[in-house]
Length: 182
Image (cartoon, rainbow, N blue to C red; front, side, top):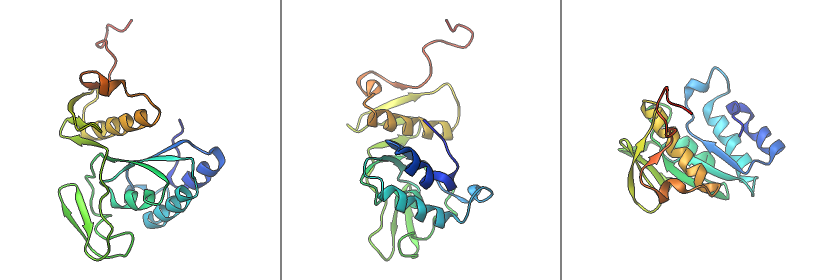
């Protein structure tokens, strides 16, 4: 596993021939490290479309991420949320205004819309590919950690590690409590 700066995703993808790429969000908070976010999304889109053996796990709630991943040959869409909407009011495909209803979004002019998701975060629960709702029991607080956990479950599915959906709750914390670790 390798985390890299947004700007280097295309070159890292070419150099490593990654099996899986995870795209969570793309907003102006990355501007101190990278170029215009729409330009980054275009570079990601081109690189992912040219990587036939790569599987993308992408947050469908972020229109820039959805556009960047939409030409990739293999994509698992996840609803991990998008709290910051100020960078995604315009369609990345045609530039028209996006209409929003909850996490759903659709372009007012072209056919670009939020893709159907395989995994979803709903409150503090995860909805798995079979539609089962299960508690997401995390040791870490906060919506960002819940979003990351749902994306991690989708990545585990890509790698064939589906034990969480065969058991009861999806838990990403260790089975011991603080101070009792073996």
